[in-house]
Image (cartoon, rainbow, N blue to C red; front, side, top):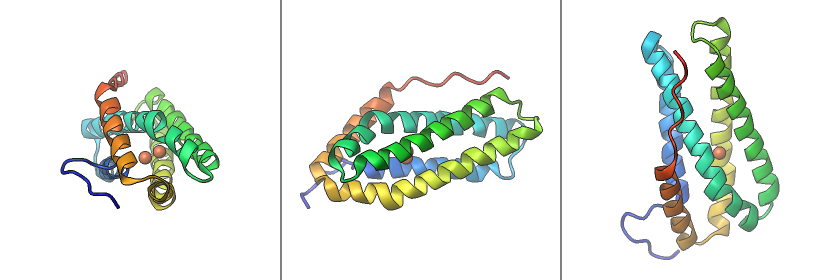
Length: 158
Ligand SMILES: [Fe+2]
Ligand SMILES: [Fe+2]
């Protein structure tokens, strides 16, 4: 494997950091209530919206083109992103005091945890096998740029 310069992160390392962050937010939701819970839900939606967008913009097209069976793997991943978007739309439409809110939240959390698990155990290892180190670092810097340009999602109505 080629030498990597200091401060250059591969795309998978960066995305795994995001996964850790969102999993930590999901963990904090347990036991949180009132305003803190609303804030956590907003942060989770914001973080996931940004994460799935940059994956779809930068990473997924590369996997489709370069990874064996990339098309099928990405069809499934994009379907899971779509389900997460629908769950987030439901959450935005529900008042946090609505009894359906918790169910919608659990559905989002379960779907995302399954998706993260699949990316880390299946998708990223296949990517790392198919791409060289320079390509992974290049994707990482494009990802960082796309994230920096990412618009903030509007606050949900309170
Ligand atoms: Fe994803
Ligand atoms: Fe991801």
